[in-house]
Amino acid sequence: MDKKAHADQRYIIALLNNDNRVLGELYQKYSGKIVGYITKNSGTYDDAQDVIQETLITIFHQAKEKNFILTCPFDAYFYLLCKRKWLNKINKKSIKQVTILEEITSVSDEQERLANETEIFEKRSSLFEEKLIELGGKCKELLDLAFKIKKMDKVAEALGVTYGYARKKKSECIGKLTKMVKGSSKFNNLTTI
Figure 1: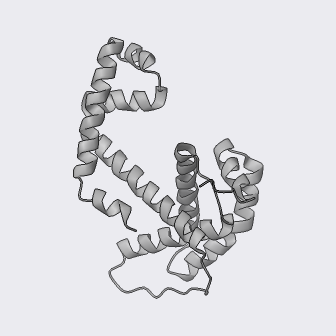
Figure 2: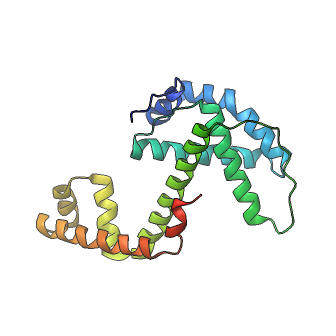
């Protein structure tokens, strides 16, 4: 089923194109609500700015890798992601119970679906990065180059090896990395948020 992009898809496009004018508009329109929520809930202005920045980076990566289509208003989706990110942060660093002050807002199924999709994407990316670092050595170097350069003949040239060797080694390294990711206890939790 083809999903119809919401008019706010322009913010996703602005992120992908680093369009400072539209990104400035995005900050001006939506950051105040997020800053207000975080400062009312045990956070500071700087905490709010960090959450906003981290959330925009996550959305950027998801849009770049997954051809993300926004099917609901940006503000509701963005607010929900920032709110969840903040709640995760305070839950991780808090031993004592924190009272969350919240305005009652309705969240549509579509906003919930998109936010869940983005959270799963972020957790998968994080697990992948973690296992890539664990992989280390020549495999990590080869895969890093392969992800950046994309063309295996150029990767082989950069590593000073033959094209055939680079392709075979890439396949082995991806197999090893896949096994590490799937073998992680975190992997099974990635489909249920």
